[in-house]
Amino acid sequence: MSRREDAYEEVLPPLLSARNPRTRSAGVTALRRAGRPGQAEAFLSDRSALVRACARYVVRQQGADPAVRYRERCTPSDDPDLPPGAVIGLAECGNRADAGFLRPLLAHPAAGVRARAVAGLRLLDCTDAEQLRPLLDDPATGVVRETATALLPSAGELPADWLLERTGTDRPPHVRVGAFRLLDARGGTVALRAAVGLFQDPDMKLRARAEQAARRWHPPQDGQRADAEVGELLDRSRHLFSDDMLRRLKWEAGVDS
Image (cartoon, rainbow, N blue to C red; front, side, top):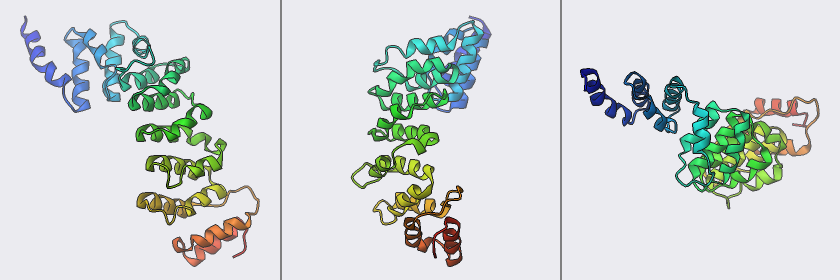
């Protein structure tokens, strides 16, 4: 073994096993210089996006296609040992056709895989609101968080009553937060109604979110006068505004002070 090989033998293992992603990525990149590019494939599924990107670079340098490796790793869709990093990795270097590999993973038993499948579909711009809706009730916080983020652009297409039902105190906190994010994104009377309905909520964090949302609220700029409900909701929000600000909001909404 040469002196150079000895040096790599001494340095690479601690780099590749380091907790810090930047350190691991340096080790992965060094695999090519060390003449061990094949070892980079194991890091294609790393939990760090930076490490995955470096692994893809090394794999490509040896003439292989990382997307092919990811597709192989994501099949079958019920593999209990499937690492979440492989799921999002496919979306990072794949194409819209790869959504076909990700959609079955929405039902995977591992929460991390389900969450990355949602994130991957969003990354590929292949989100389907009807398909993702059930995941807003997922028992895992990470899955609901990713689902709410993916559904934000289509929040206006979701049934308002269905979302409002999920802000009730009988729902898990993470489901309530996800539903409220989407209601707030809708804007208009529905968003204000949802916020006001949480002013007395026992969950302090959700109550604070609701108050912040009410402070940000503005009437839709569609030229139509708001109905009497908006005036009532603004009155219930009076403690959040100065008198002048409240009058201005009502004037903008076209309701009587």
